[in-house]
Amino acid sequence: MKNSIAERVVDFLGGYPPFNMLSNKTLLQIATETTITYLEKGDTIFKKDDVCHEHFYMVRNGAINLYYSNGDVKDIMNIHDTGDVFGLRPLITNEPYKLTATANEESIVYAIPIAVFQSATDYNTQVHKYLITAFASNAYDPYSAEVAGEIFVDYLPNRSQDMVNFQTANYTKSPITCCIKTSLKDAAKKMSNHKIGCIVVVDDEKKPVGIITNSDIKNKIATGLFPIETPVTNIMSSPVMTGKKGLTIADGQLQMIKHSIGHLCITKDGTINSKLIGVLTHHDVLVTLGNNPTVILKEIKRAKRTKKLRTARLKANALLKNYIEQNIPISHIINVISQINDAVTIRVVELALKKMPTAPPVTFSWLALGSQGRSEQLLFTDQDNALVFEDVPKEQYEGTQAYFLELAKLITKSLNKIGFEYCEADMMASNPEWCKSLSAWKTQFKDWILKPDEKAVLLSSIFFDYNRVYGSEELVDDLTDTIYATLEKTDLFYKFLGRDAVKSPSPLGFFKQFLVEQNGDQKELFNIKNRALMPLIDAARLLILSKQMRGVNNTYERFEKLAELEPNNKELYESCSYAFKALSKFKTRQGLLRNNSGKFIDLETLTKEEKLKLRRCFKPIQKIQEILKIRFDLKNFI
Image 1: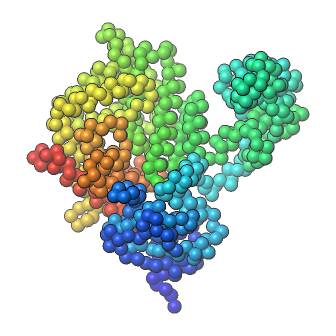
Image 2: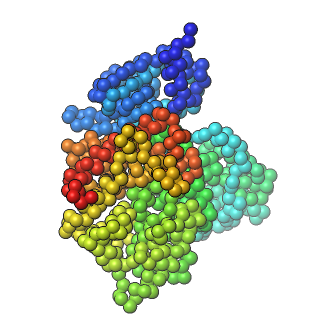
């Protein structure tokens, strides 16, 4: 006789990781022993310092708060909703719980017996990797944080990784060399001029006889063991380890591990008895193996062409997809991708400066605006940027601006080639309106703040989220000082921002149906950006500006800061922070799935559970908008 309850549990479990990695037979084995628990809001599942249970848990419906408590202080670490697993400590380490788990609302939770689960998944490394990652990303204690750091630094491999291992290694084909009689001083100069970390010592027939690395110089010259003028033969590592042309990544990596080296000399016949034709480094192996954030950043910094930068940024997209699939916390994903985006922009500016006929006439700063300015740009979107340059005499202004406009055109063109589309509204530094001196920018912001209108609010909402990516920090600090000093002179500007922040009502209609587009190409689609994300973004910006808080640009971080500043509204602000992160993750998933920005969603393609998750994220929007209406007295201003 069939167990219909167990089969319903199987249907649910099979839709979420790590259970979607298991066979139906294994799922049924687990589901038959799974306990279903109903919880009222505030009910506790386990408390900090409790002895670990014999189960771990999965949310079927509702939401579960995980928080760290210290006396009367409670810090929410995470909010889990449908499909999320939690309480994994008994699976990983036999220690008391570090967090407390309570129901955030009416909830149904599956309690999955650990012994049954472990028996059913004993040899499934993919499942174990997922659970270790989930545990490390949600744990509170310092040890687990360290484990999480190690997991996140390395690229989480996918099924194609084994194929990559057997690709031909991409080594340096024009290695820098020196002869046996060269002094260490001359060899070091050569390394410095070419910006490399090693140099190969060759004989008269170009056969490799030794190798010198930065470590050799540090350990043998800087310590005083040898004088700087010593011959290279005195400090080189010899004999060298060699490989032949066409060796695979797996072979190269194996040799490096076996001999504890970071460089492999490639010769014609694979031995030290033939001519040197290349060098394979540990960095080369990592670049080929996968999308390690550190490797991508190094690749960006070393890029000399836009094409190389595009390749590196595309690797970041693959990294993003993998992180999303592995259910890595969105806050970590945002931090990683934001660093990569900024690194790409910095390198683009550096390369553009090299193309200019002269050095910049004065100091300047390149500003990222909008989503990149808030460090929230995950997928490729259009560009929003600006440039501020040092004040110059009136007669020099036109020529100075012309220089920076030319520079900005090179930069925006390269960013476009990399994948960041031109802004349709031309809100880019290549537009004279967004390429100005410090004084001109100060005047602009004063006009927006003191004489607000519809256009001013639209533009300032983008420009208030600026972030200095390259150039003078002092210029940007000076501009910021002026902005906040001007904000103290008026309340009217806040009302305009407030009116803009509440113009989009809750994304749900009267009968709790999704509000979709009514006409145009996007008819019947749901605009998750405008209807769900922007109300939270606008609210966070307005509230943080009204608190005169500087240096907090990211939306979820703004809400977390507001929770600190207003303990009486802490629960709402934390809910807004969580909702923003969940919506961002949902939008990113949709964008990756459909190879677009993820802005518009076809609701018919969503499962019931996905729709429920979306609806839950909408709850704080109405509440935060009510606060804005009261705080900024918008009742008669809308």
